[in-house]
Image (tube, rainbow, N blue to C red; front, top):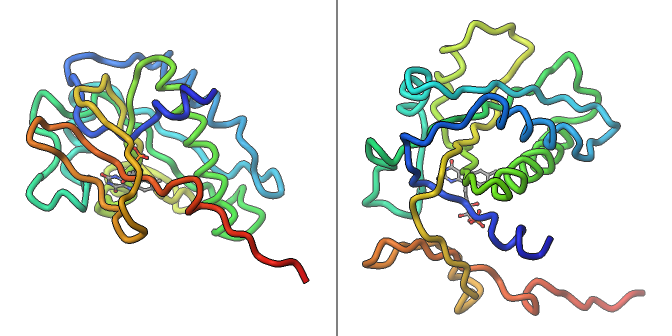
Amino acid sequence: MQEIIAKTRTFRRFVEKESISETVIRELIDLARLGGSARNSQSWQYQIVNTPEQCEKIFPFLGWAGYLSDWKGPVEGERPSAYVLCFLNRKWLRGSDLEAQFDLGISTQNLLLGAMQKRIGGCRIAAFNPKLASLFEKPDYLELSLVIALGKPRETVIVEECSNDENIQYWRDDEGVHHVPKRSLSSCLVSLKIR
Ligand SMILES: Cc1cc2nc3c(=O)[nH]c(=O)nc-3n(C[C@H](O)[C@H](O)[C@H](O)COP(=O)(O)O)c2cc1C
């Protein structure tokens, strides 16, 4: 468990020609659906996109790696070979939108952990152009909230300890290795006195 969690990083460059079958993506969504859910409302539905033609339509709407200001996103040949689009089903939602977003975090982490176990890397993308939703013939009660890009990773991603509390920006070195600073365990702990 520790190993798979540590390996499950965000990947943004892929071997685009390595397709991911619908069967495999369904297996990943099968993990997503088992996540905990406030009031057990399970308000998320997932759209699979995995043909080159469909992927080409999705890509222009996506925002990549805001901290890497001189990088415009993966070039042709390194783009995702599949996507899972996460729609909030307002007819199923029982609690607040905030609760639904917690649920989405849990379900997508299940999905990404399962993907990594199959050597598939992924990137959650919240920074998409909202016009992406209009590509789909969908009822109003389905709201697009997150896109997950998937593919065979074509980059090395390294976790390192933050040098200080402010230094959380990921960066890429001259060899193209992606570095992700994580706060140390000790900085993640508080020891507040209990009254
Ligand atoms: C809710 C959420 C939304 C994210 N949205 C984007 C995004 O729009 N574009 C992007 O390139 N990465 C996005 N990411 C990936 C984060 O940048 C990434 O998780 C962070 O840099 C830490 O790297 P790690 O996932 O390897 O720990 C998102 C991650 C999460 C959890």
